Amino acid sequence: MGEGVNAKNKENSNQLVDIQIQLARIEKTLEVVPTLAAAVETLREIARNADQSAKSAHQRLDQLQTAKEIADEALRTAQMAIAEQNAQKEDQMWFKRTFYGSIITAVASGIVAALWAAFKFSGH
Image (cartoon, rainbow, N blue to C red; front, side):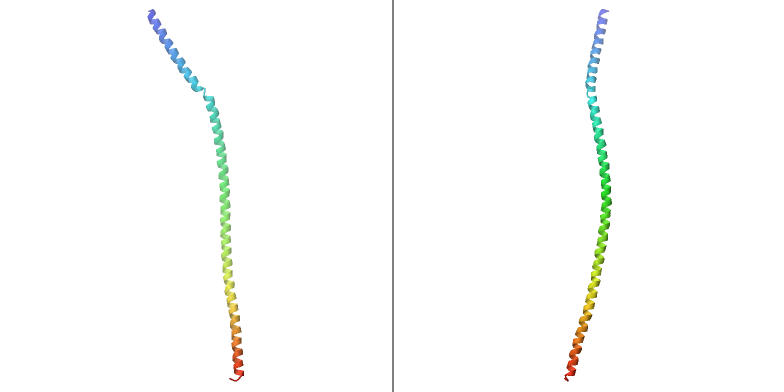
């Protein structure tokens, strides 16, 4: 019976050593938990900052979109004004041509009439 008790004690001792080894491994693994917690908190802070930056950038993009729409409308208005000015220039050009053409025709007719009268008056 003494051998059976010794074998049982030896087996218990071996189990205790195995448990101690496993506990030491667990303790070693748990040593990094505080470091990991700090790293996780740092990552959370970085994520919050990134989220704020993204929201801020989104707001700036919205403002830029509004500014672009205003600029596009101003461009359309300017193009319409230029087109209207060009049409007015064409109208003015037509008026000038018509007016000066009439004057040239009147002067030429006057010269021809004067020459005709002079020719008739001279008796030829």
